[in-house]
Image 1 (cartoon, helix red, strand yellow):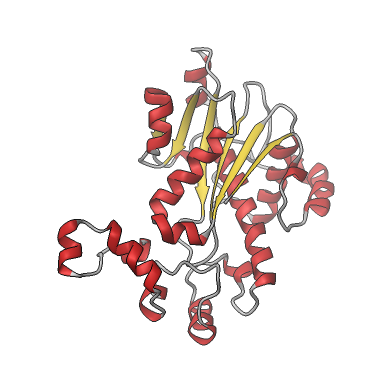
Image 2: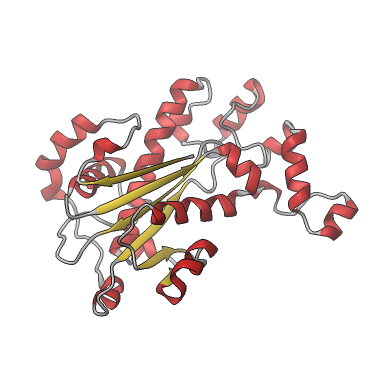
Length: 269
């Protein structure tokens, strides 16, 4: 598990990528970026004099690799174009916006990386909560958080109380969450490119660990790598791991453990 804190210098991130080329292209192409999302959600906290961070994750669904969460504090007055839902922004533009966000000296950001072994140990939901709370913990000025999705991690709820707010579809309507979404996705994509080099044959850099037909075929041929999530189906069924099974059984409700059955949400561990 890794935490990375940044302020105005994306070189703080030790991940494989195309930083030098992107930095040069960013200055030239930033004028072509679309308009960013509005900041009305943050403004509600600014009016109270509070420092608010947006929080989002990348990588809950894949069969391999980590889940990555990012937190981002973009103060009032920041003017960066192209900050929108990372899922609808092209890879080229995501890289550009990532550089703009992570090299701006006024923006604070942090990422927390939770690996596949930890995901298998505590399940993907708890691993996501751990990643999100870890990213926020690295940003000491944070006084309030806007979290993408329907749930606030219990760690953040305990720390911030009512100042921790969930926002369904937040990455499509809130600047700070969208910024965190881009930072999390670019970080994870570059990590998957590195894992592709370390574990050849699965094309992890291409599909980012998601369960494509080609990825599933490679798993059946090669077996799982050390970065595959053994608690996720179909890996759990094809290559059962006694340690993982014991952990899943220990997490199951008492009635389920007594029956010896499998959880209906096995693919999420």
